[in-house]
Amino acid sequence: MISNYYFINVVRFTLLVLVQVLVFNRLNFFGYINPMVYILFLYWYPIKQNRAAFIGLSFLLGLCIDFFSDTMAINAAATVTIAYLRPAIMRFVFGVNYEFQSFKLGNATKVQQFTFLALLIVVHHLVYFSVEIFSFANLLLILKKVFSIGLATLVLSLLFSSLFSVSKE
Image (cartoon, rainbow, N blue to C red; front, top):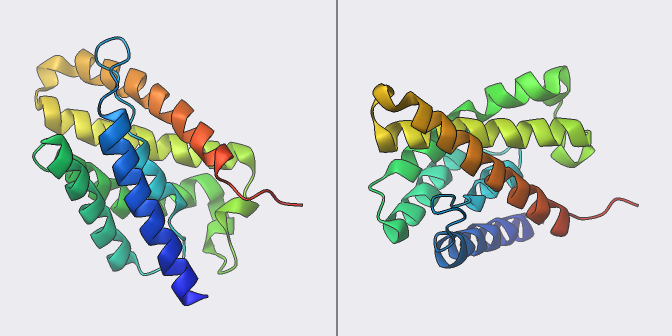
């Protein structure tokens, strides 16, 4: 069981990095929209696991994407931020249900799952584009990128999530 857990997370990590780097970094919808589907690793990561290891894996994920995208640790900063804020976002979305040891993301309603994923994406993109542009004089540009790229990321993430989820019978 433990080895299966590690194997699945290693495969998810590797495949999401490869898909992001080889496919989605090459896409340019309307000239500037590049979906960031690697955020799904942070969405799918088990809830009650070691938080320090999760933050470390998030840093490694962001650093891998930065290495191949040549973005100078911007992804690493954004992924570590949402890894750190993930428990607070989960408490906000799932309420008291999150505190139970038996809570699983698959047991939550679709609206809660959608809200959780959307908040992860919005926080990630706010940090990412604020650090990338690094000027509040361009606040409208930051918000435009957060909205447009966030929407594309959300749509593709929901598509991937529905394609690769285990159906409950």
